[in-house]
Length: 513
Image (cartoon, rainbow, N blue to C red; front, side):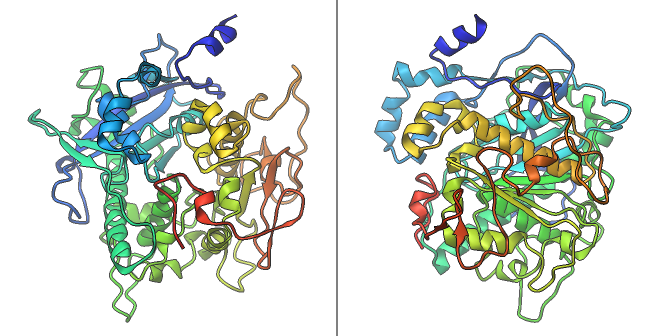
């Protein structure tokens, strides 16, 4: 009966998380003066770093968290403008009752709930940082990040202040009126001027990820030294103290890094910027981000660092200032025991042939090196999925996603993404909970015994190894061959033709090549 009533409710809603843990969340904004930084601010107006954190929590009476951030009307108008509505139309739409229903949509996580004590076999909760794409916010991937948290992870979702969010707010310690950071609309056809502006965005994003890392270290070691000045429902000054000595952020290679679209590009550039921080080529290369030699992030990023790239947008990685690092392999390929990267595409990005070719290059070993890793990188796509399928817009607005983008079953598409990420983490030695029978499409009450992968096992026993298999044993889940340079096979084994980028992405991420 409750399920039927939920389907009749006109307010857009999320399905429940499927992991074994309840999920808590906090909205955190920390002054950069609280954090050590090895790089000067790229923009002096950015005085804080903002993120939402998702984590396994104690069972508690849920405290609602609205999906549309505060101030809701301004975020709604900003989203409307991002989708090409003029200022007057955006304002008009924000008053329509049918559209205002989204103001009541909540995230299925409990605001400020108490962090669950990690199981003894885990020791400390594993941590992931997730970077959003154009038009994203710290809330816009809540179902993906919350699903991972429900499987025993602490997931940090920054809100970048580079002009890629529809709108963002920088608060001040004195409580004065916050500074507004509006969306920065850039021409999407490559040019020297566009590259320059996009690189300025990347520079801010990389600097913010460095600050996020410092914030995580302090959350675990000395949370009372941090001031959370973001909008919160609770005013408990010790709210951050629950994270003390509970986060696995000190051991090298333990923090996972992930992102979607421009966020995936940000992760690639950040990981390479840190790993190759001491590179000084003779061609005048000037990095967008270079930490100090004694910076803690330098020891954190190693070949074992887990990396997940969702619909990687490669264009920002191939301009003149970024081309030097673009030519360098990911750190995984500098060790025989590195963690192979995982890339998951939407079908739309799979059919975008030029970007697919560069995505393969980004995650592959150096040219001609076939022995760098015992396990090769993974790259997949779910059939009938769109670029938005990896964000909240798929499960939150399934009807619109099907009608406009021809994306079928967005909830299952999201579950496939989560399964792949979890199994990739297990194979990197990250301890996360088992995948649920629901996510694995088991219909009956009994869970069958799973055949375990053969060969040497250097990771905890894989409970869902089929999700990373290439035999198409999972319906609608297609492995993409890395060595197919002449044409890319679709689900029926037929070669696909190059598609125009406008078929791959929504307005705001349409790249004119």
